[in-house]
Amino acid sequence: MDGSALLDQLLPALRSPAGALAFVPLYALWVTLLLPGVWASMLAGALYGTWWGSLIVFVGACLGAEAAFLLGRTWLRNWARRRLAAVPKLLAIEQAVSREGLKLVLLTRLSPAFPFSLLNFAYGLSEVSLRDYSIGLIGILPGTILFCGLGALAGDVARFGDVLSGEADAGTWALRIGGLLATVASVWLVGRAAQRALQVKD
Image 1 (tube, rainbow, N blue to C red):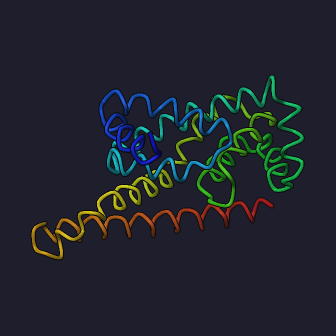
Image 2: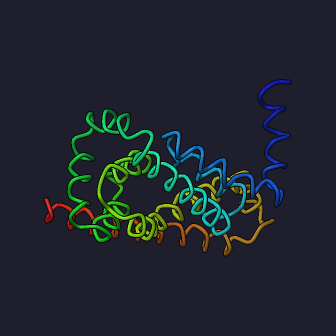
């Protein structure tokens, strides 16, 4: 069986309710293995739509982040320390978050300048409490919605010809694209504000 045939069988399975439930631990594993979550988030958006995709990704990302945090604090502590030694910015965050706690966790989650997966291990090396770390995961919501929205839009691109031929509602498409642009602007503004706040702390 070639790759395209396998994909044709896999995508309908993932679109089912059972597939959506399976996507959560798969996403958590993806995050724990330090793989970039952008493409997986966009896939969720294409499969489940912006809002259901965002919920699925958020739950999976939280589970993966908690696992990476606990591994960085226990069994993989030495490995995480060596890995982060190559990223001075993240080592600085590790030291600062021990002092600032929840506030800094939220700011770094909102800023796009810090890689999500490695940041989880950096927090594990810090002295931040599990409670503050978990609450700070709320900060990934804007980016999650953005990438799932992009994925949902990409998933509908194949049907864009229907709009051009008058077979689909152009107004609905205009609302989708307008909503996505508003989300992009919101994420950009929030990220800029978080970045400025972090620079003040530096």
